[in-house]
Length: 504
Image (cartoon, rainbow, N blue to C red):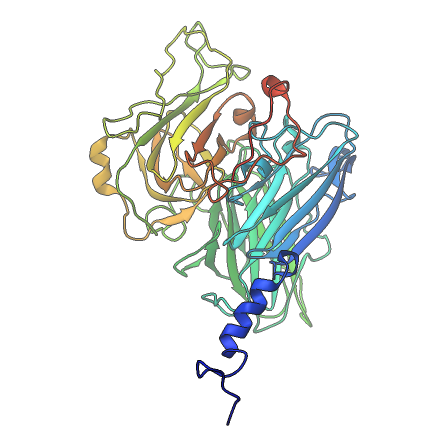
């Protein structure tokens, strides 16, 4: 092979790599390769639904309940133009999507203004470096009780291997505390003998933990809230409010009908629901003998729970979150009373900008005010949740995943750190806290923005059991956080204030 040489001895025009680099430099930015964009247009309206078998008014998206699923791939750009055709303000959040550098699109009332009746807003965000099973829901008022909920599935990119074979089919399942199943209804799922199916299951309810199982089949857990797990087999699985997971089910039984069964956990009056799974070319109805739920005593699952779930951290600043009802003047808690959430017990190594307040005492006046805790960008934090009540709670943190390193009975103390799972704690965004127990999680504040930490029990969050974690990068650089969008409206106490200068 020969080429015409120049004075420097190189082939005329330079090497292939140099020519490619020069072509890249000359290419307009608009022609640069971008991650794919998925665009949606949603009309949010009232409509008639019957989750309990009785017609009632609910919230529909494009006439659907549940709302349309978003089926995307890691790094896709998502554009959702939401038209609010209700007669009250509306916001949607994308629970579990980290909104890297972009809390302006998180859809919580502390980070965005609601969409007013008759108006629309276009959400623009990227599912950056994430995979997994998530859902969206309204954060305004108690709209989640009425609908406006749907699944958000993020697949791995084709070149990124996953630790299991592609399933024959994926089935989304949204469980709540208001659905009553019909054993005689048409099948919701279809199996072919010998094939394996993925069920993506989320608990989108308001307060009840649920247990689900597949009659006559075992389930293999493969993903929890965006993390692949150790693949163990289970007959039944608990799923607490706000949590999601994926299980694989292999059609290895006699071809006929079977039930997908879900029942409430730790409830005074247990509820159950079923859906029919039908084998293709099967013959025979499902057995009326349903697989029983596990014992009523709370248990931590060996797979998706903190006890075995990826990790590790060092003890850094501690945010101590006791959760309880605010006391009344008589010392009794009442349902309408605001929920209380206080930050306590910050040890000496806590950073100076993590605020701490005293736990409200009996007879204290509850102050209604913004609840914001400042966090240092890229700092490590340890968050302790203590549940002093007789009911289970779950907690969610927007903008991050955390390692759930411990769940134990009693009160937390520094000596408890010796029991932390620092080997394989699961990275997730929601953690359960059993009655009279505590949970510890660790994370890195590597995502600048205003992020909501809240109880997933919606009436508790509505009554005040939530706060915002403000993570600010001193560099004020686009490297760390996107600027406030020019089209973003201001409201509340900042409505008349000038918008902050754009980052550079």
